[in-house]
Length: 300
Image (tube, rainbow, N blue to C red; front, top):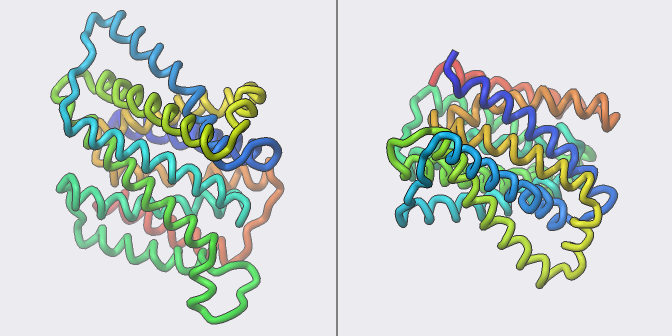
């Protein structure tokens, strides 16, 4: 089994735990911005410590990034911040499993963006997978009350947040792969962890400035609720390290496709922890998206 496969599965599991914790933060204590900030500010120092320990133990020097590294890394980091905020806000619109499924439009869009930016193409089978996934998105975009004209039902706030988060996560995945590859032929784990260190540090700084200007007092709340927020940071670090390592080893579209296993984790979380039941329409829509995932994994 290729190394990137178990790494991706582990990253998806850790990410699902992190979203569960962020939903708890959003519902009980923090704003959307605060819950998003928590994942970066508590993980950044841990990642920096890990990079220091790894380079010390292996006797390696830190990479010397070029200009393209900074372009890819900073654009990827900004895309991830905005995407995470969309997902946290989405939890207030639909149930947990559906919110995660909305986010999973990223796998379809990463394939397209990877082709446009990095030249990693999409085959005919890839196009088929995208079309199957689009059917699932149309079904999933229909709100539970199903009132009004069809175009009104698929252009609601939940659909907009979900699709936007997918686009932004695709930007972040493509940016992170591009940044990691730009570091050249060095230890793949050092490339992944160094890129993650730079990204999380810049994200923490950007979010701190944003909250200081737009939501005074929110940073204090994040620090005050360090127990749950700290767990968000730890699970974020584990998940992000897995994603960054997988992006270094494999095409970002393939990594995101396999990462759709998170849907299964989100269903378990929905039933066992949040006591929420998806509707028949949502189950059918998830079936289409799952078929799209399988096509991407098996045929590309």
